[in-house]
Image (cartoon, one colour):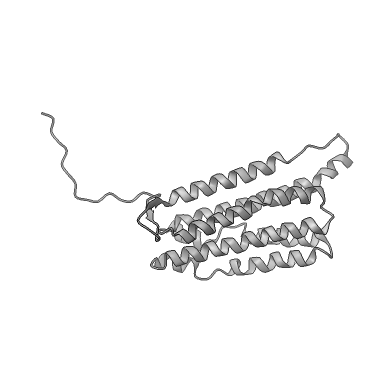
Length: 219
């Protein structure tokens, strides 16, 4: 008879995507499941924006410059989605408890981000108009507010997690971001390019992932 391996009483260590408990009931879900779903939605958003790109109609420089606003706003929107994806990744990796509020605010964030391809195409087609610039700012503002709400929901669900509370306790950029978007909306009637400058500044503020999350994630 083959010798049986000795039984170990040492409990198995939880994996990086260990199950986390939903506060509203006894259902246990994996934190990686919410992250994977969000990653898939953001990948589709980028794909939709890429499908809307069109090459110049001809070979002359004037025809290239006609497509330049579309390319520039695509680059900005691509950066915006990438920034949300990066910070969202670090945020969920630190989250141990996922409540119903976390799932719904996460869904609201994805809804706002799903509007980015729509306003991106509109700006590309009418970059000199104030209305597309305002619409882009409204989507930017809504995305910033829902991300801030997601952070608050995660803090409420993980009020027992000192490590997470220390990482998210002082969200200066999260507080400033909506005001930058509001400034872009307000400046649109003067010049839509002032609005785009505000939205670009907002992206530059977040181009480096939130250092609080990265620091705690590494520890």
